[in-house]
Length: 74
Length: 173
Image (tube, rainbow over all chains, first blue to last red; front, top):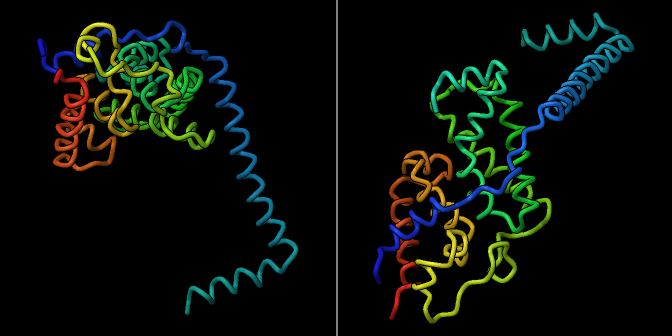
């Protein structure tokens, strides 16, 4: 064996060539995806809030709140 | 990587972001290559990672652990791809990096013809990741143990065992 395995692997690692184009950065695509992600997130939050509000409106709001307060008191 | 480059990238500076990518591209490429089965998956994992870095860079608080953060994202994305495709790790016969050499003259080939990925191809996924990080010279044992969730002592032992495994496979008898 002429060279130690460590030396050979170190040399081989240094010889790694990253293929051209694999690290292409498309900012417009990234920004579109971020925007889409945020819209979905906002949509989910709004839907949750609306559901809670509708539930409270359908049932007696005061009753619900007083129940909550009494639950905390206990 | 300089802290101010990362901070600039956090503020949306594209040149700074490209500098970051340039700095870590060999590590990212080599880790993705040893974990995934084909080049298309490697490309997907890298593109997903670049997007995740771009998207979440703004939230990054600790600049000191930046490199570990990038590699963790990459490894998670590789694992997601593996899970999605229900593929296990790079198999010996069906790999992107060719087949291993004949038993005879293996060491000669090790020094000459074979590339890094071909040499370590017979190892399992985790062993390949450990050796790739180890030879990139960019990761300390401490950083590697945090990224891979392995205790430092165990990691040191594994590295020496894996080296022994490679030596046994390729050494002239």
